Length: 224
View (cartoon, rainbow, N blue to C red):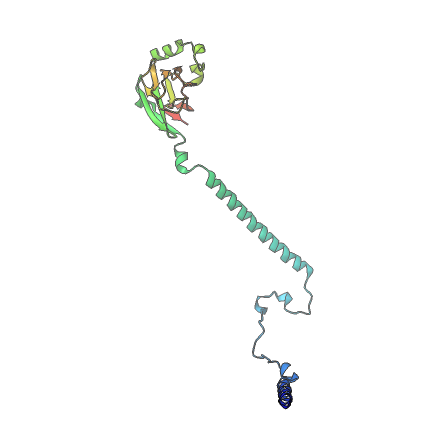
């Protein structure tokens, strides 16, 4: 019993001693930093706003706002213009594509009755300088009985110059010139026979050989 009383007294005493260590004075103590300088931005401020007791002009505030808004609008317009121009340049055809959009062929290099094969937009183009006999034979054919009854005068601007895209209208194969049952063009892939004017006469092809856009300008044949 005596030991319990002593232990309790010791614990209470220690609590009192420890409580004396925490004093209100120590808790309220604060350190003062008088060596720190407050930043001064007077050199970048507008002269009219240096004195805090002087009210600023409302017109100057509006003018400043208008200048900021005008600058932002100008920057936005320039940015939008750059985006539009970049988009147009991105989707526009490349320079190499524009260069091959049209080709020129010297007609003097193709003798009468001879043919020439050139490439336009990755496709073979059959060019033939026709003779008078070939033109008359071409006109003598009754196109109304053909599968694709398009008159040659509507297909070719000048019957003396026959310009055809050398791609079969069936499945896109390349026909052979001077072959077939009609002496024109023959597609060995599926047996389409075209006559000398590129008109389909036999086989699965549904239409005549296509005619690319072309014109004669002096001694030049311009395709495209």
